Length: 262
Image (cartoon, rainbow, N blue to C red):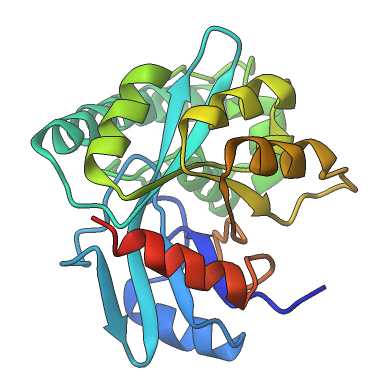
């Protein structure tokens, strides 16, 4: 397998990652990555002041990962080279306020159920991983994964649903703000075929991804050929290790060219 030249799916402390923006160039250099896209959940990183910047020899693309709702399932869209529009900023603000309200409800439930103080103050970017970490670090005899499995995961006693952007609305918002919009990790969904059908109206699909099981990429490759999509990819890093997956140099060149079109 060819060495990734880019990691186009990275989360930072602005959402539920542990990597700080100032640490990103060194983390990329450590794995010979020349280009990184910062794609925090429902949030545009406030520390990036342009769609594409260069820091310590590493190209950083300002991106976003936006969850959307279809009539069949929820999908994740990746927008690259974001030039924030009023509409996208308003939607992100709405989603972040909902995340804070949801987190407060989950925290109250967990603290009441376990009799502990999680010492967690919800802020923009908060997600269930923050709460799971707080549970694991509390006096509760409950680890990180156990917190998801027994307390805050889907259908668990302290689970609270959050607001999700309708798919067509999300595509419109990202298309207006980003020169490249793609479908994230298509083989993670319950119905990959339906997810890939949605990719027909996008620019890209995440072909390179570190799935936790063996997968057959035939359907993804067929969609790329059929709809003339850019084959992007990334590690979906929530820690400090980049480059577990990503596109090779030839595709990165095409990606850079697409970013420059707007």
